Image 1 (cartoon, rainbow, N blue to C red):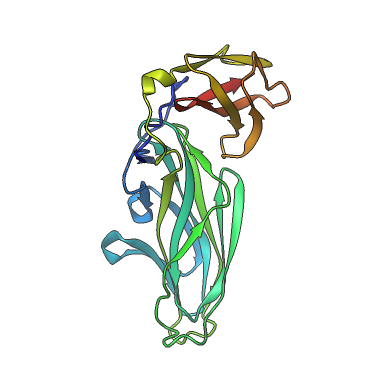
Image 2: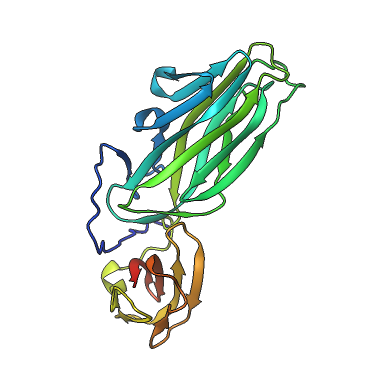
Length: 258
């Protein structure tokens, strides 16, 4: 039976963050953790459009007679252990409005075109949610991850009641949840040395099936089968995530490359 997989990570260094500044996410939350934009300590700069919290805090609203243009960003951190998340953004506009938006996470930007729908029964009504999925999975850790939305010239277009744009929330789906249940004690795994110069070894009670090395933005960089040593000499200095799969389950650990 599919049950929640407890995603445990040994935090190898202390991060000097203030949880009042970065929005904390619970990696074990069900449903998936969601950052409601109005609840975060966001920063915003809209060069055209009036910005306000609306819907009793359900969303931020930017409106103008002709054009909405600007940016809003906030930080998130894990409330406990690191986790790899797929990210979905929840926004809305009027059917008759058109423009584009950019979402940037950890230096990667996804662009989305938001066309108008002149055939809609009411061009001045809000369309069904635009749930936009980010192209890369992202590690949410104790180091703040910045989520940035750029609204690019959303215009009135076919609408007759100006421009209205709503930014509701960002959902972080823990992709480790929903796996097969297993005994966490049997999956006891450690990496040494850590920090790593060129190679590391893995101490595990059970046989290792695979080792995957990810960047902190969730990009898969290297894949290994079970080996005596694991060579990451070709990687630049920095922090990486090792997803280690054993015969009884998986464990994710942070690797520091010197």
